[in-house]
Image (cartoon, rainbow, N blue to C red; front, side, top):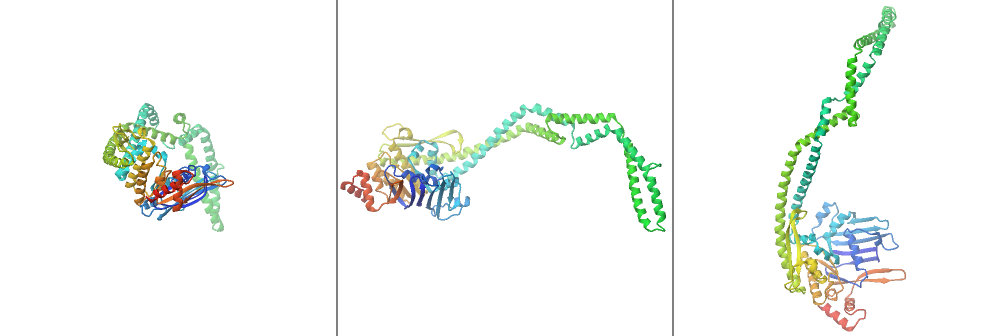
Length: 552
């Protein structure tokens, strides 16, 4: 239930702070006094888009804050799911800045507009005149049936199945499209794969071949160099090894009389062994090196094949060619196995589709039953509202294919005249009739859904007299059922029925105009109703008439 509303620097409102009561309350005021401004501010708390133009001229920031009492409405799960602190008193706050920035808070914790909108829809229902257009919207009509049928769990289960089915259908469509494209490219892919497979590429072979080609191309120079190095080390005439051997023998001969020569002999021996090993290895490699034109041609031909494949496929390494080979093989595998996968997905889609239809059938049964209940309730509610010959029918049809909310179409048909043809309600109902229909629907929904606060914005448009009195009965009855109902009205018959009466008015000073709202005293209510009955000039008759209305 809405406990209080605080508005600062919004449109014509410099500062407004008002408390609200439970039950049925009314708000009156002249056209342009600021009632729509207050509703606009409430709309921002319900997650509507902000417009910096709504910030009061000359200020940089506006604030709208509302306090709701929610202890009796089982809303704790919402707060837990959104990781928000729960208290029996909930505070919604919206801040708008002239820079275009907007901030939202739930219980002083920053929140997204989506969170604020979701919570706001659980807290308050604002029925403005444009909502009458919803009567022609199938989604609204379907929602009415689902609310009255208490279809929350059935709809949730249907939604899970529907999303699974749609996802499987999308996957199937994509796979069919991919398979068709792949099959069109199959010959090309197979040719490329076969060419790569015939090459018998191995990782690292390009580097080895390039090195071998380099060696074979310079075989004579390499062999000559190795021979010279071998001679330098091991030649009997001037070679390093014979000379080093002589040095070693001298040191070994001296160590008996000169112990220090023993250490030097060990070092010379170690060097001699290492150099001799190097000499032998050089000699062996010299033997291995030979000029082999045939092998050089073979290596270069292999390299040319690799280079040609790399250029063709625009890659730089053999590893990239091997990856491409795996990719082509995978594509061919998909092509050859896609038929099996497509068949598998078709079977899954069929199973899910049958489950969706079965769940949709459950929804249909509940909606048909709810439709008959709606027809009975609407007749019983509309006849006292000045429609003795009214007929209201809920037509439940079938879609060609299940949709997001089931397999049903819904259409509200209406006739206010005796023997009149039933037609779409928005096509035949007058403004006053639509207002009475919407009030009846809201009252019917309110009986099924525990919504804390309902605001009616001039739902009495196009009615007067006894009908207005009956509409007031309905709103008063809704307010008496542990619910807060606030009606913005121009009709004294409805204004007189509120437990509490608020007035919206404007005040001008030298520089600006301000909108205000205040709760009227008993005597002020009499005068306000008298003005609504007779205009600007108060007459004793109007005052007496106002007191008579209030005494009801």
